[in-house]
Length: 134
Ligand SMILES: [Zn+2]
Ligand SMILES: [Zn+2]
Image: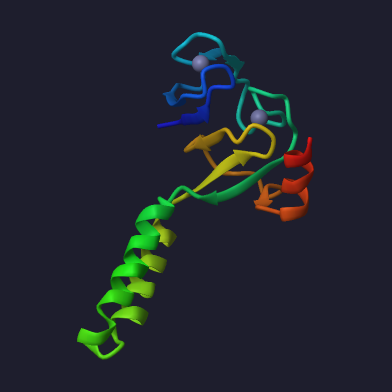
């Protein structure tokens, strides 16, 4: 299901909304933020009107790190075999998880809206810095 996750600019709460694409507006739980979701794919962020997005794995980064950490902890027991094995597990898990699209400016995450346009690339630090500075 299509879902939007972001931090509210007003009350700083992180929230997730699931919404059908036919819905014309999305509201944060506190009601301070609204967004207009037009048809997919977006050209502008429905929250901040930013035109640049990047893609990343929807895979939970914390889970990924825990798997690698577990591999490292098991190294003495498994004579070092656990690490490459769990790196493989991590890679396989990550491969199964679809990419999500993230807005450069407001950090809103767009999950499962459909195929991400080819023009949306992985996170670029130079672009990211531009938005952080602004
Ligand atoms: Zn709020
Ligand atoms: Zn945005």
